[in-house]
Image (tube, rainbow, N blue to C red):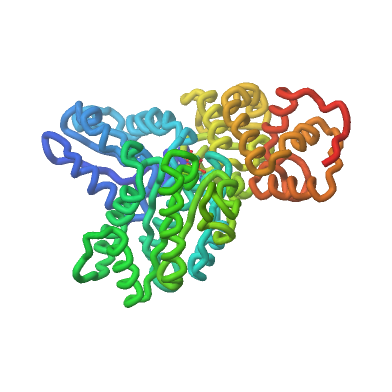
Length: 459
Ligand SMILES: Nc1ncnc2c1ncn2[C@@H]1O[C@H](COP(=O)(O)OP(=O)(O)O)[C@@H](O)[C@H]1O
Ligand SMILES: [Mg+2]
């Protein structure tokens, strides 16, 4: 439907979904139907829908029902019909609506057309889950843990994974009502989500028990009959052990899940996600045994692989009529190490900097990105502070090592140095090959915030 120039301008798919709302007043249900169509019809452009309505207030009225990951462009039928040249009219309508989308600025976990890359990580996760491992997925804040695990759960639901069926149950511990934080609450949430999944796939369980734990065991039993496997994904695991729950509650909950994994190795897998493994390392937590001691296979997550990161920037840019040159992409990678939230912040600065009417599409070169780096530095200052915290959580002496590295002062640490470097590499702070910073901006930040160490240090 869109003309060739329009397609080129925004990198549009050859077909666009148009909703002609027939009623005098457009309905929330109309939007639901549009979203369903997007799910089943992959040839249409996934970035936006054009909605032709009768009344001019539809856009404001339906704003809450519009999904975050897609732009809905509303146009009243009267305006469309009054346009002298429909092609030109549509072009300028879309230029303003799609050009001003701020697609880089996406703070929520990335799903659907906002999700990029992670091919290798994804394959490894699928393999681990199929083989029945329980995993600890760790990574810096905003590095993409939740996005990746949601994607995994979505794929399980779409039944795309090879082999036996995997039934996902997602639990975000930070979303649990803090006034009711107890094992009972958690079990109740898990049970509700698992029940919904069971009825979605028509897993039959007779004589449902009222007790949450018994009920979940019944679901595992039912899975055994059909050869399915349950995958429990518990995000922000730290909340269990950092004082938000009582320590006894947190440990009781983890012990129960470990018990499930041991009793039902073919029917149950567990993924815990969080910043790092620190709280799960000790053999004992206070006076109690740590149920996760040496139990989880560790999966540290870094930023996106460089090719995947380039693709992400290029594609998101194209949807807003921005064309990134190779050296612009190089600089973005150098500064961010592919850390998706950092890349998006920098991409958004570029987007804000290029006026919409200068895009035909507009070329974004290295010089432009370079000019925006000081502003980028100010915007991610808080993230850099968190990286320091994260590095110290990973290895107590990491900050000292990082200061030396940033200022080019030797740090002769033998085994300790190797261990610190190795840990920082696995978390995507240092570069695996080069013994240098993977996130260039972090090195700059360290130099600006800490003076050069006086002498070489010994570990
Ligand atoms: N694979 C990805 N592709 C595109 N954007 C991503 C990807 N992973 C994360 N992001 C973006 O990075 C930010 C942080 O992602 P999130 O999954 O919430 O991280 P975490 O759970 O590690 O804190 C979000 O803005 C999200 O949109
Ligand atoms: Mg998260």
